[in-house]
Image (cartoon, rainbow, N blue to C red; front, side, top):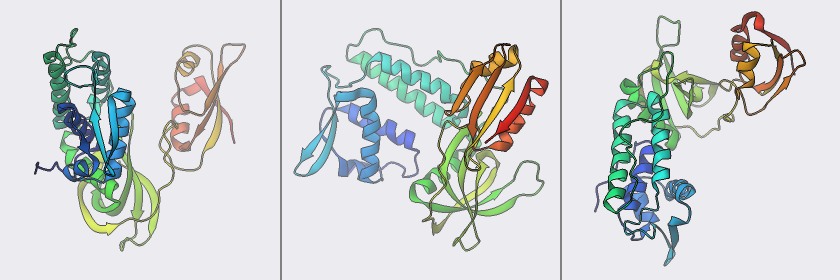
Length: 314
């Protein structure tokens, strides 16, 4: 029986491992066997294979054998990769973009996986082999957080999210001198400005009720461990593409930016999925934007000084 992978590995790592396993040969891999090997549910295998299919299309084959679902990667090439170098380049770009927020051990594993894919394709006679070892896409930031010391925290949170678990953690909020202990049910990890947050619910001490929903900065979690409690409630919708972190119901604001650098800066960017920008005859712009984070939006408007003016909200 093959050795089982760590049940607390991240979804991204499981996706790469499953992809690599399917790449190894062209035989049928049964869903139940994959679920047992990867220590996850059959539904998780279905989700992961759906993500692989979204990239390689019809090269991912599936079917039923005596009512058992199977998957395999088929290709006209003898290595049955179903992957071209263009896709490998895209994966390398995704690696480059994600690097600033990944812990060092995860970065190494991603690098190794991309390199192995590249070498495997070269061995099977593919030409124009790209060099995926050197980043081709640079990303610069003003003050990033090193998440290498927080990898265990991320793994604990991901495990709890998958299993609806409840964690007891020690958290030091920004500006506070002392840390506080919380009973916390994590719901989703999100990233904003290269900072990783966990959205979830702070619970009463017995875990029976929700005190309130909140987000915590992962790097400020000092200690964390899983409890035997299970969270059976729901979380507020944390839709992506909004301005700032979700705090309240959606609210629409109207902001004018003076002509010049401020107007150009705002016009050139997407601030939220729900936004419209109107250019005025004098060169200024009016941004109509929907947010669930009014404090963050107000702080952002104030950062422009006299170049921005709040016209109203709905």
